[in-house]
Image (cartoon, rainbow, N blue to C red):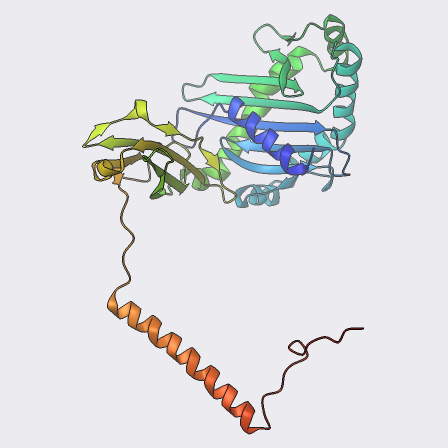
Length: 347
């Protein structure tokens, strides 16, 4: 599996296990993701990432050998509290070998007939506004849930029919009480520390840039597409209106997808009769807007006489310069063909 596909795998898992939101919501979460996969290309065979709410702050893979802070606030924390970051380094020093042991156990005792592709792990702790502490640790094999930790019953629950694996796992992993203490204690303390450093980043409000596009369909109808991008936080609600009436049942919406700069993008579309186009508007609700904004498709602005005159003048100037150069070459002894213009000789 290429590295880019492994990152997509982690992002997909992140969407499934996302508990907390951005600052100002009722809860916040701290999540750690790991994945290991077969690699015939010699690329890194495991990857680890840490998330505060929806922001990645740490990355680790076999190629870089140790976790690396990837956002400014985490880099400042590392500088202010290097001992805390050393905990990551110590905990991940044997990550590759630990993941290999997991895979061997699944293959030997997990009753899995298919060959190994991926092994994923996610641990998450959440702090609610009322002080309630939640948490979960889960592992998946080849994209399917395989085993997870039940904090309330202090036990590991195997979702596959693999009793022998459960016995081996219980002897291999630390005691269930250790994991409960980690989720409700150490992980929550890390979460509180990170929120102090990330406050400014999580509080930011970046309104979406919205564009309405259209494309013709083969049946004579057309599709209006409302694209919103560059916004933060990720919560957004785009929909369509016709003559002021919401049309949520008739629209199609895409996922809210992260951009490389920490913002998000999404889209929604609707199939319409072209003659009714002027009756449709895209309504976008986001905290970056003081109130819901409406956007409609607009005809491209025609090229005016002034702009057309400028373009014509530029074209005339280019032709004039080319003519002067050609004339000067002739005055200097004739226009000579370059090596690329001479016909090649045949053998």
